Length: 502
Ligand code: GLA
Image 1: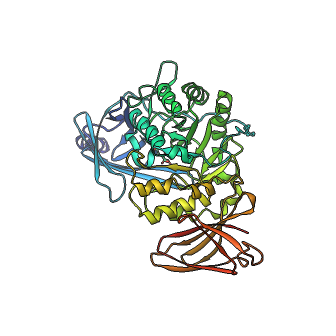
Image 2: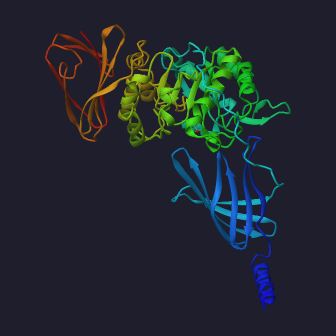
């Protein structure tokens, strides 16, 4: 009887689960630059339970909840990412020898439909952790004595960056006067990467026929070229990272003539804990140092694990202090006004990086962009324009090239501003400048006009009331003040940025 029952349930299972999901499945997407984006679903089906892993772009999930039949199943992938958890959900069905899958990037995103085919077992497996070096101090490269200035492709172009775009941006940098205003680095962000050749050398994809020739072009315009990689097997956009090829990639970048590397945590999150970041970043710091070429080293790990405490030790010239900026007043102010406590860590050669500029990308008003640049300059932040320099409104051009404001950012004392006063949505930030002057920013974060008064002595800006020489860095007006208090009306979302001197 028991035997008959077992046989019955076997046939029941076989008819429901006629074919099995067990196996390695791959989704391939041709990106149009000669590279292929591959996502892997390594599944094991036991009755209605599905276990396994999902590898997609930079992420590697373990299936924490998988169930259903080949006709309709659900997979929930989970992964630990620093102190948080990430999840992804797929609905799927098996049709012949293909898996049809559907997912949403976010709860409100449109449905993305994918088709997977069987892949050889083992293909796409996540590589293992690399041994981590003992910690030591990477020699200081002596670069970035003032915050780096330049341009980066990500904010505006994302994966649409190409050799042609970079050359045109370099030309525009010169013809617009931005180079003469101090912007010198042209930085290619993610999506330039191709495959590795037989010797493991990284190549550029079809959008970049020759990095060496591109570097020569950029250098011929007295500009410098920057590039991007990750310590993980994959970059954030899922391209090839420098995992296991750190020294080799540093040598390749040097041979191409690269002057700046942004090194983005991305796929490394699947292999290492946040506490191990320092050793991982040190490895590339050493590799750049050994390459013999002066390369600005930009750490991008979203401000995790108090990077400001160890960024300089791994040879970092700048380190991201936050997650990604977006082109909105909310994002820009949330990031910018949260930087006060990091002031002690900024110094010549080593800077906090609240992310690239959004000035000119269209999501904020001109007033808001002035506030953006004012705040970033007070913060001694890297000034990496992120807009399309080929098509710049005169107003945006004038904001980005304001020499009075840039001089604050580039002040050689390298002191980052702090918030010295706040009342509701009004804030005053102050930065010491070389030669004893101060930069003072009066910010009105509210949407309505607002009066702000500075009591010089009370804020410790100057100890006793004396005649002060002031310059308004947006109107370029010089004036004096011999009263203890300076008051002014500031429109919504605006700033009065002053250089104050006794
Ligand atoms: C991360 C970084 C961004 C950008 C993208 C590229 O999100 O923080 O600045 O480099 O990756 O994929």
